[in-house]
Length: 107
Length: 243
View 1 (cartoon, each protein chain N blue to C red):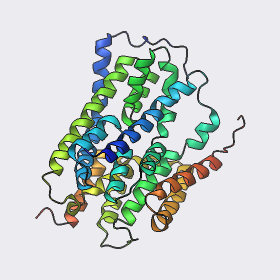
View 2 (view 1 turned 180 degrees about the vertical axis):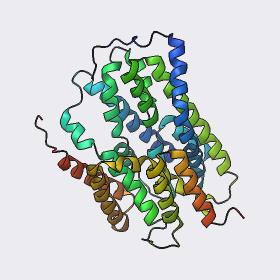
View 3 (view 1 turned 135 degrees about the vertical axis):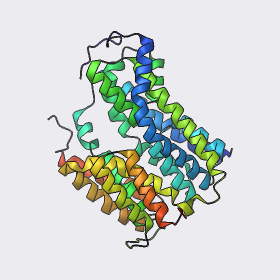
View 4 (view 1 turned 135 degrees about the horizontal axis):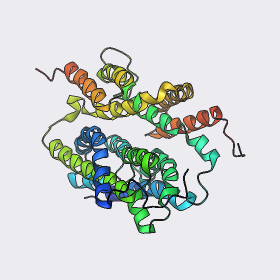
């Protein structure tokens, strides 16, 4: 294992533990301040969006809104399944089904 | 918040039973995490990490979203400890909210126990434990059963993925990196039923795209998160004064 990478991983582990244990240490007597909850309420939505949208619309670094963009097509299929059935396995299954079909992997 | 509850309340079943109940209730969510963990292992190797480094990450960080983002950063050749750690911190800030809602039930446990249970808190195990707490009360063994089940499944599926990754010559040809946007899509879409969430999503999408086009590295994630926080805070009538 490379020192630099181990350092990055352990740094990630440390801050992640901080976010998990921090509230127990800080807020266990007072409860969470209401303003904190209000400002953070939509943070997960924002982060999830930021992880999804560029991954689907610019898979190779440039904006690609076309039928040649397999990530976009498979993503649209997955989004429909997530909307209709709210089931992670079904969403992943259909999304990957479309992706593998477009890549001709069933042949 | 029901802060006055004692730790050992619950349904009256034994501590041992509580542990297995927590484990069983987590299994359906484990089914969703296994393909994600396998892909994480495969993608980690494709990004140039070793199997050992991938296992170290899954067993110490134990946070799928943050791991996937770091893997996309490794494969893009992003250098610098700070950006990895800061992005991880931001993505995992949501844990603070989860921890705060469980905190009143956990304060009577010894500190070491609190730390162990906090370490295993992931989106899935939090959801299972909170559901149970609201239904019949909090029990640390139930919490431990949920955490441990997810932890073992995550470690094992990462290992399977790392093994597979060493045998699949070029996973990008398969489009396996689609696993990350697909998983997050499955988590995102159900949130958008609320109008405010939809607005936040649109704001974040525009900022993320603009940032991905014009900002260096993965800073667009931080820019979009900040924009989402701002938009969400304004929509919720933010501020720091009392309600």
